Image (cartoon, rainbow, N blue to C red):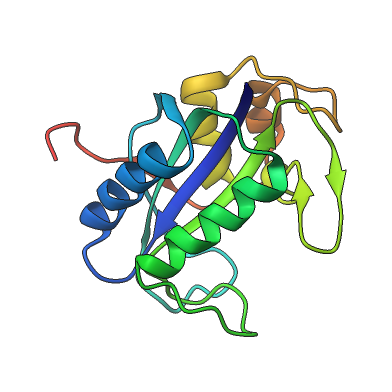
Length: 164
């Protein structure tokens, strides 16, 4: 069994419904969800002239390999209306990134694990720290909590009301 941490996010359409749909599809097709953070609202990163994102980090158990997991997540994104273009950091209904896969380091043309921008993005570190603050980043050999403390990202990350 493999343990993967994923971040789900979107800023287009019904953001809460899109997250719920993604969680259901992940559970049905990818693996059992072990933990999930709260849902956080964050201004767009990179291209800031767009609606705020809702993000959530989950931990799953899966029998899939890292590459097979990527294939299934891309299918789920497409099913939920994600249209990929050459432009980076644009509005999207759903984006699902693999943050960590066990403690593996994978560098290929199609897949980089750990996700290369984790330590630069509060919208990843805050929900990740909520469910796995002690997890050690296999490249930097620092805990997620320590990476959050040293993160220089100034974007405000706000947890949504749990009653939503």
